[in-house]
Length: 144
Image 1 (cartoon, rainbow, N blue to C red):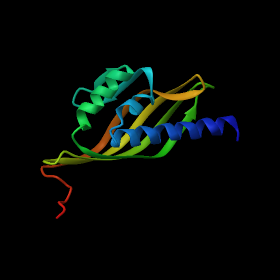
Image 2: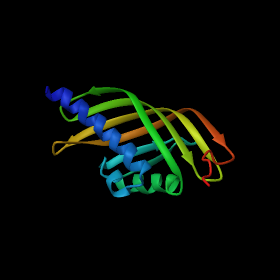
Image 3: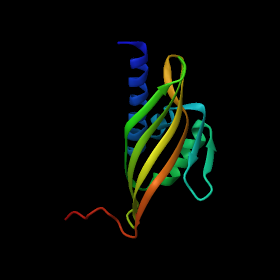
Image 4: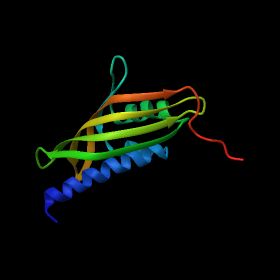
């Protein structure tokens, strides 16, 4: 396989792990997808900036720890900018249910990646929401 194609596939796998570890609450592994000095910009009224792998994990954990969450990333646009850097945009959908309320979100992740020691990491990411539908009750049904 061509090295550039291999890099693209490794970045896609990196993002797949990001979503899986997030939704399964595997926080140690979730942290391992980020570079140590990663930066996150979260969508709020004033865009919260979080710096550092562990700080990002703690922030995300604080948002979804007690929720059922499902995240999807698709239609990646990835550009290799050097042998060890890349950038990408992913369309996204998420569903987050806290039991008393829930939301569905739509938007994009804008990311930068870095390859260190032969492995790709997320260097920075910004989530931009196009739409967020909030519900004042759980979207999950009950089981008998």
